[in-house]
Amino acid sequence: MLLRSLLHGAGRYAARSSFRNATTALQTHPSITYEQTLLNVPETRVTAIKNGLRVASEDYGIPTCTVGIWIDAGSRFETAQNNGTAHFLEHMAFKSTNKRTQRDLEVQIENLGAHLNAYTSREQTAYYAKCFTKDLPQIVEILSDIIQNTQFNEEEIERERHTILREMDEIENNLQEVTFDHLHATGYQGTPLARSVLGSTENINSIKKADLLKYVGTHYKAPRMVLAAAGGVNHDQLVRLSEEHFGKLKAGYEGEVPDLLPCRFSGSEIRVRDDEMPLAHIALAVESTGWAHADTIPLMVASTIVGNWDRSMAGGAHVASRLGQQSVQYNLCHSYQSFNTCYTDTGLWGTYVVTDRMRIDDAMSAIQDEWCRISTACTDIEVERAKKLFKTNMLLALDGSTPICEDIGRQLLSYGRRLPLHELNARIDAVDAKTVMSAMKQYVYNHCPAIAAVGPIEQLREYNRTRSRMYTITH
View (tube, rainbow, N blue to C red):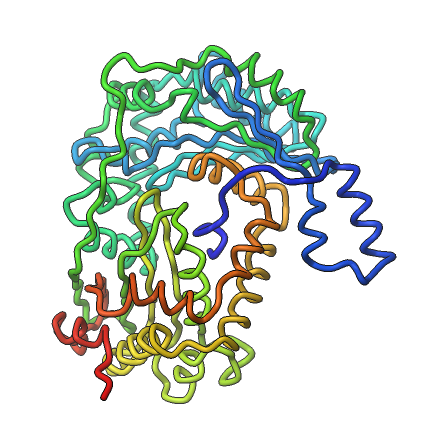
């Protein structure tokens, strides 16, 4: 998602009363501008308690809220030997604790009408719940219980081991997930980012209670956590609850402080040929920027210019992107989508395409030609259109307390603050065609790509030929 690859930061300008006043004013005074409304959203309040845990919230004055713990720990912090441990821990979090059996936990959550969820990514782990505002104290206590008091019973570990192995089998049928895992494996080969979040089958079969406890003891530290909430949330109450339930979390390290190892990018390819598959799935990418880099937004705008398209789109041949128009006119593919996946210090900027086996060469040529065109002859008109679409996608992705809460937690871990919407809007407005072309020339034009291809890919050209099309020869 566009938002997932960008938003992260601090503070908003107005309190809840201002937000309500702005909403009323907008209804009665249509002359209020989009920019003015961005200044009148709830303030993001951030407080650090004694052990270093950060508490962040936005109060929208509604009867429901989302609250969760975001942890600066994911598969990138694993080794080849314990890869898969972070995801295994996510599965174990909803089992028995020192206070509750698994049944007690499930019944209590259901009786509250709440929804409990979790996810693991390459750099972060999150546990969160959506509930009624009045039930916030109970939910925060439950979250603290599953973070700090999971028992890791051997019987439950064995049960989840089989669940994860089934999940891995299901993921194998999701060819987009498979292709992107291969893209990381070849683009970041020999580094932690090359490894799958789920881990290898061998590791899942060998992970023991001691491995889980060691990972928790090493990475689940208060300064690496954010208790985030959005919706109907009283920040002062949330701080008191965090001190009560998370105040005993350790802040220090018994041994060496774990460090985020740099992950070098390698221009390379991986091919998984299967002529029995009906369509080819190909991801082509170059190394881009980390979360906080100044060129991230121009690259986002460039990615929006490339756009996305599939055969089910109502616009057909009348889409704005040139690559989309060509896809219709020349039957290049079944679908394509641009992406810019960011990590702390690196990223992947590229395009994922699903096409017929005899259209691979044409589709790849069209994608690379469009990249080169944007790098050398981008127009202000298409940049303005992309900026507006980018803003729309950004705001639509923040529709609801859960995505806002997720955004707060992720931004505080990635940026150390939450970017106000008006600041982000100003950064997008500052981008023009010259800025886009400058960023594209620095990161895309004439750079070595990483390629992952799965399916009937006999027609996929040899790597050096693909590399040679990363620039154009002008006379």
